Length: 153
Image (cartoon, rainbow, N blue to C red; front, top):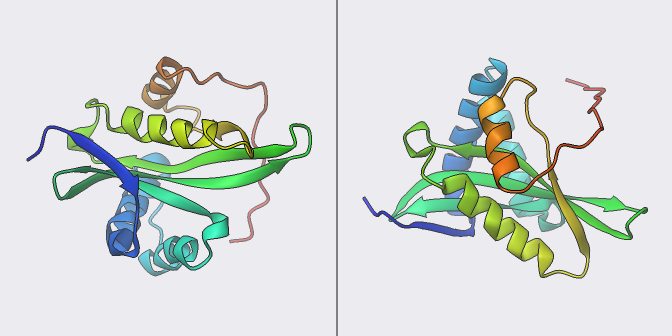
């Protein structure tokens, strides 16, 4: 097993790993068992329509150990896109090893290098104190906004 984490854009080859990560994340964060076929169609949708966003994967050698998805949201107040970091997952045995840090640093580097991106955002479960601490250590600041949803499922 390699000791160096590598970050790169995901390809269609990683769809099964991304689906598995999303299934695990839904169970871990919300106690929800989501249908893999729905998640697979959703993950594939990013590759079918790249304007929706992209995935990054973290690897140690050949092993995919973490991933995140980035989607874009236009801000008329800022005249630019916010990149939303979503679907963050790191294998439990690789947590605390800098995997998310490496993923986020790559996202930030890509975003900061684009004149069209005005910032990065993410959301986190209210009770996920460990993730919140990581985000703060990386320089992200909590906003005063709360997220509301009208879900159609």
